[in-house]
Length: 264
Picture 1 (cartoon, rainbow, N blue to C red):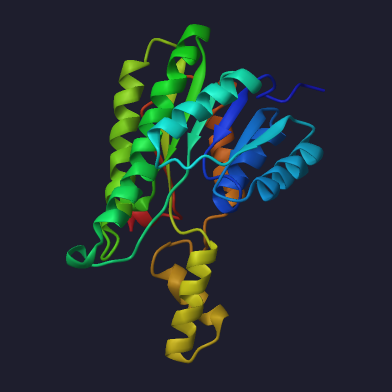
Picture 2 (picture 1 turned 90 degrees about the vertical axis):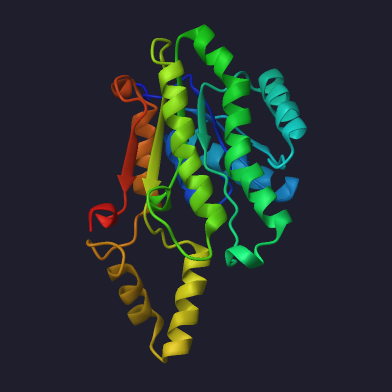
């Protein structure tokens, strides 16, 4: 039997206590990486999730609940992880917050917090972990962009701006690390059946007087030519590949996983 391909690696996945982030963290642990789960939940809930993932995969999993809007807190988080867990050599910038406002009604505080968490935190985490990766001659950075990194959408200016900015960060980091053994790539999912999307579909069904299954089919057919939602497990599998031994020649790439939405 062969060893898991990510054995001996340490992965920090932001926004990973539920949904897509948890699917990514779970896949990395299944492939052998020790994992830092992160999210804004209570310490008890976060530690319970970490314990369950550790028990299921046999990997070391810890939890950190840092608010990524605070750069000083990010610096303390990385210092704490380094002391207690070791330097992360896989970084997945997945944490995101979003708001739904027309531009002229967009509260300043919402805009500033969205950019702090969605963009600035990714920069700071790369800044703080990259030196250790370069010193070891190996590292993997994956930024979670979106279909909205390449197209606009009404009343989502913070999300569209954030996901576009992550593509720029990806390209810049890839060039700076091209000869170091570190790669930096972006993954751009289409529509995942997350809790917010499920609530949106439920609202559509209620307004139009149709059942939720019909509303779900109509919603996704307008977006994905495949007429299927993107499976979170498949996104996790793609990211695990990007972090594995056969991806050394992939850097600076933006990989869509959107059921063909970007070409429709």
